[in-house]
Length: 119
Length: 230
Image 1 (cartoon, chains in turn green, red):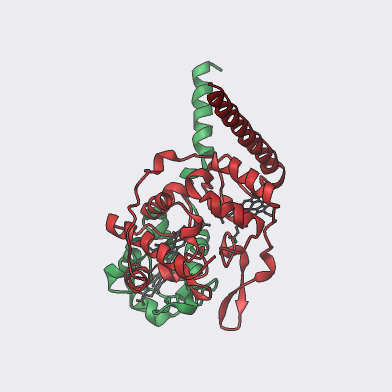
Image 2 (cartoon, rainbow over the protein chains, first blue to last red; image 1 turned 60 degrees about the vertical axis):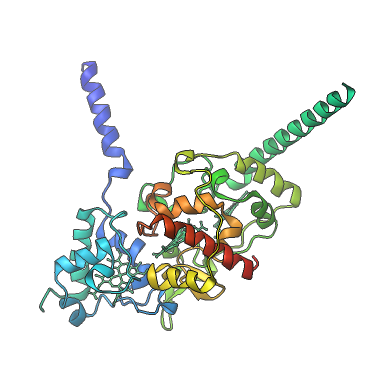
């Protein structure tokens, strides 16, 4: 094998191994960033809920969650509650999650509520 | 001339004394602290690494903490993060929703005064991430506690994750009523501006706060600290 190929292979291996570029699963992201308020069961009863003046949305509530479009949910996660006329207590996550990870989270929420927009 | 010589000798003595303090401190850090604290960096880059982190990263301790506070705290450590380093590792089902599993939260090792001073000296030499700190970023000023609380709760939503007095506020983040005693003001400004620059996976959102907000939050923490003594 010539040297250039070896170097190219090593570089490729380094890129593959680099953790920072790795995408996290929706479940792991939800657990790490959302359950502090929305609860480990997604029912809105996270450890932070006690003193919050607006309670976190129950993500298993199909009626409430089906009232929102996927685009609105995406926006709420990326930019926070305020842009969709919801509480400032729902924070913006655009600096922590990539757009792709946020799209995965929207799908994950649809599984939690077992609902789609409109039903 | 004699006086100068003597002053020089004293300076030399105290220099070498603090150097050997720090050397003792280094030895203690690697034998007693490195199992839980990252002393060399970098910060966790994956959720897996975040989950496994046992204690706060200390590789930029010299840019973050107030030495005077650290010496005291190490002798008499009291909990700062109500739900531990990563709340996910310490949550259980409670009667009215999620609750903190106190069983998993152990007391921090306490040090004797000399040892606390020695490790503090060694830690304060760790000045990684100088690139994120601007000396003098904070300009001392005042803000009433009630204005501060409005900003912290109603306008920016910080109260959801931080307690502003024992037993009131959110539990996933560190208490902020001791923040001004623990943390350098310029660090607070920098951290609030961009938490992920310090700790890429941390579960505190970046709210793109204005410069004026950044100053106000530090005023507020200082006001809180005057009321609740750590």
